[in-house]
Length: 202
Image (tube, rainbow, N blue to C red; front, side, top):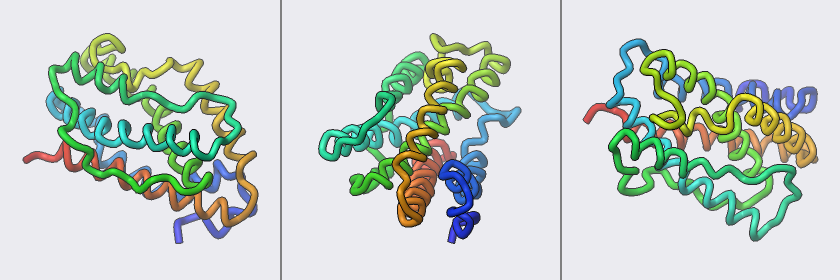
């Protein structure tokens, strides 16, 4: 059982998700290793290829689920795969030839919410990476960090607050919390796999 899940009834869904997926998050950060002082542009590019292999199909799934099982949202669904394409074009790299870890279609609102939690949290964390890459290589949204820069700190923070409010609203039971945690954990693992496939030395 994921760490923290037993206490889900005493925590907000955000706290439950964060605590229960902490190990997944840390493992993903280790695979990405984008803060490594020895990071090369070549490896950075391969990581972005892995991100695109993950984000393109996942964003399409989010859109399909919302069309067939509408949820009242206070925000538009993420469309960040195009930012990865732009970054890869600047870096002179093509997207992955195929999706390397296509997740099953979303079946429930809880799965939808768990997957959305991961990608929206990643957008918030991406701002830290954008600043790091600006310091390291003087990259900006026009030269290779459009994905990590996203909408900028103010808009990204505002959106994250909206997401957290929405997550609390759609969580109606302990079963919802368990399903969200399971979906979020699976999403972290899928992203980890995509990056590992693309970024590991051949």
